[in-house]
Image (cartoon, rainbow, N blue to C red):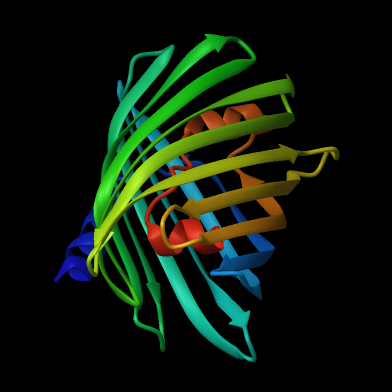
Length: 253
């Protein structure tokens, strides 16, 4: 039922999208190291991804998603992620709501997340952002999860961005009530006249009391459509909000 509602909402937003949307289509590779009670596991991730956004007056919307494969410990599973955002654009600030779902096939793993998100321009070349998300995760057992994240983006040029975020949260389930911590740095640059950009990122996630820590390195390429600079495209697709337990562990969002 939750999947149906999320997909129906995404389809309705897509039908309302003006023809002149901006966004990207891309491919990404990620490598995740998971340390669980002193035992290390490495996982390789490949995904196709995309996002597009639009504005209608003071309202803005964004749809994003990814589909891919995670190979870990001699076995592999397929996954998909879909997320939708609706926000009020005040010019120098944006305030909105979001919903997302991550599903890992052939494994008892799923995230369903809802939340609030905001972005504020601090200069023509930088902004700060924050989000509060909550939801349910199925990952070995059922978890209630919430997270607060905040970060910054800085544009060294209209076609080069560097950013970072940090967050804290809580996971509650299976007799455990533990705090969690997230941290990430990322960048994107478009060095050519062609609308193709390169992405780099590193994300870390830790849950106290169960000695779980994951670190994910990602590299990818995107084809940007709709015209303009990378900063213009990011203004049309402003939100890259970290979501639930599965997503943070493997860097899927």
